[in-house]
Image 1 (cartoon, one colour):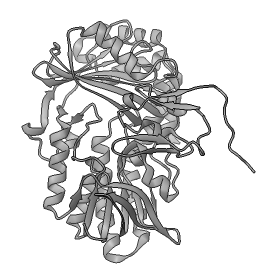
Image 2: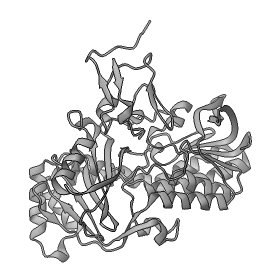
Image 3: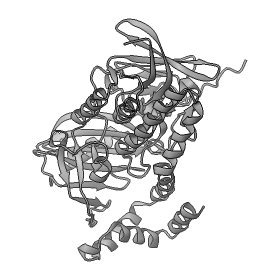
Image 4: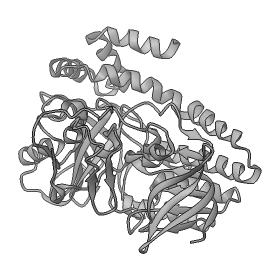
Length: 388
Length: 66
């Protein structure tokens, strides 16, 4: 580790290492600081992605793909199953191997990666972020950089230290728990989603297969609706009811910022990417692909800033993010607010109507149409989103 | 006052994300709360997936203004 870099990235998840890869490709001297002892561990993720999203970043490879997904099941509170007709391919990843691969690719491009390096503050001068302070092997070091990229996940402390309010509101934070379970019978090519108050108020429960009779079984509940009963309790009850003979191989907690992108994701000397910038799909809670998309833009722009010393270029990251995914997330956020108003009885009747249709007509579009019938205000909300 | 059951904590950062006062410190091995800044808003307690936090009483402490 040297004492000065062009770009210092805090956090070695997919957003951070993708930023590192693209900053290094742009010719910058790059350092990634990861607080844990190993890249990719612990995994805090349902691990599902779609092929279309993944392929531009990394060739899908058996070594980090646990299962291939070809169908979805949506399960209403009363047990009615809707199997929407979905074209395309998805994967459940093995994130430990996947994150490792992304870091390796960044390293191949010349990025330096240091683990067990705990960043505890940012350095600022005249309103510009000029580096970080890091605890490493018993020493506290000051490292200088032209750009710091905060890829530090849902905690998003780098942004806070610099002066950006990154707090997630209680109705946007999804409080999550997940087990990876063995000895359970699940269809290995199907992702299941359970909806309703009994499973996950203000969120959903997922069962994502990981091969050899294992699966990620997890759920997320809106933080403002879990005061009486916490995520883990919901999950334990589900496991007891559905998979009493399962063995739990890992159990983990998580927080997912299902919000709109932060209004401010840059300041002089600083960019935020991934969960730290609230760049999560607000409906699905998915953040791997969107974090990588943001990381790619941020990394390329950081390299240009390092070359030109022109902080005005940071605006390009903001703009490119908003044009690519930010606007879409804004719309999804409006839809999420409506979906979360549905009562269990409404979800049941939507599912009942859809399941009467021939299987080929059970599309997401049909689902949406039924949702509009049950909740006419939805169409107003959606129109507002698209025409505002 | 707040009690932290560290043995239950998975270090996921959910509490840090919702803390409006930025008073939860988290390293790779433990969390702690800076009592002097904490206003006992209880958001960390409610957001935590694993019930790590327990508030002893419901009295909300207002931030010192003087």
